[in-house]
Image 1 (cartoon, one colour):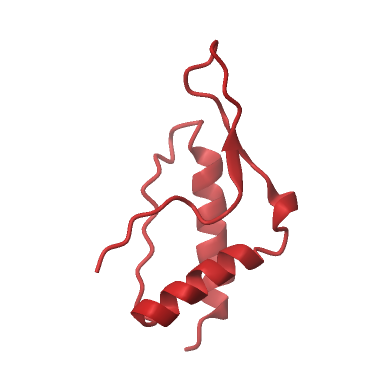
Image 2 (tube, helix red, strand yellow; image 1 turned 90 degrees about the vertical axis):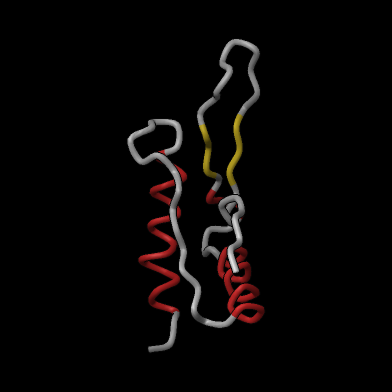
Length: 86
């Protein structure tokens, strides 16, 4: 089973006619403890089992995508992996 989705945290882009690709803004104030993100993964674990592989497909060298990439990596490596049973 393969599931491809957007990043499970709050982010936005400010539309602008002058900037066709606006910067990505991560809003940590809406979910400072990542509870919504944890709930998202809890649903995936419940539905598909604990054997889930998370891939970060962002371009890490792209300055626009870097904030998403860093936030996702932080969440998966620092929070999600620590919450998993051995």
